[in-house]
Length: 139
Image (cartoon, rainbow, N blue to C red; front, top):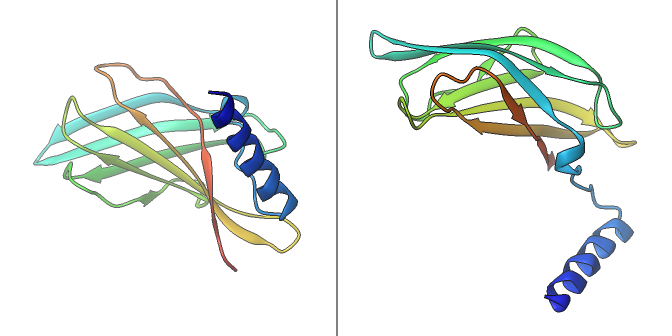
């Protein structure tokens, strides 16, 4: 176990020294999905929800509405009211996963990134807490 801890610390230290982007601490930055609803009609799942996040060093405060339709397979990401956000619902009733993405530009070189978060939909529950990760792209 000690070897694994040393290895992880060494890798994180090396990536920081090289100036590589660091992932955010997941438990310190969260998004909240509220009022989630999904309806199955005409061979499509229709979904809608609000997603909010408090302002922090990882991003500004936000509150936006998202909705979409999917056949339950792969679906497509659909823009939310705030065009920086998009959402997708994948799976069939009882086995659905909600995905929420936010496009961001940050850093001194204007790096493009996507914050990505997801939640497994459970029964009639309508609130979820999401912990976004970052994925950076070369500019």
